[in-house]
Image (cartoon, rainbow, N blue to C red; front, top):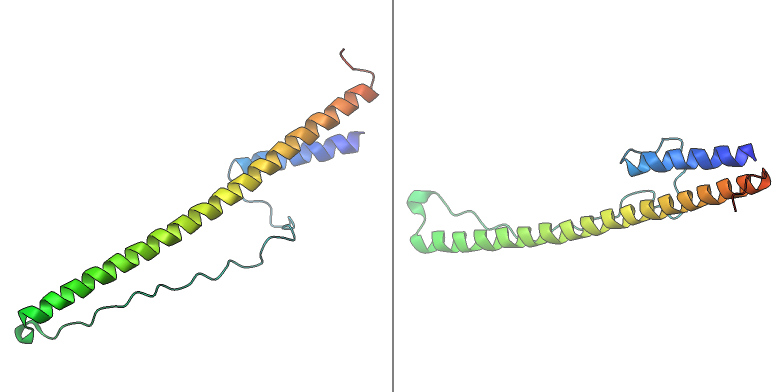
Length: 126
C-alpha cells in the first residue's frame, strides 16, 4: 500500500508544479495525442502598397493612392494579427483545461487511495 501512496503523492507533487506554471521535466513522456510540432500557421495574405517615387516627382493623386493602400495594408495586418491572437487564446484555454482536468483527477485519485488505505488499516472513522 505504501507504493500506491507514494505514486499518488508523486502525482500530486507534479500536479502542484504544473499548476504553478512550471514546465514538466524533460524526461516526462508527452501523451500520444500531443503533436510533435506546432501546427503550421498560414502567412498573411496582405499586399504591401507600391512605394511612390521621390517626393519631388510624386503627384498629390499618387500620394493619396499610396496612403489609401497603406491604410488597407495596415487594416489587413491588424485583422490577421487579431485572428491569430484568437487562435492562440483558444490554444492556451485548451491547455489550461487539460491541466485542470489532470489536477482534478489526481486529487480524486489521492483521496480515493487515502480512503482505501485508511479502511485497510482499520482507521475508518464512521
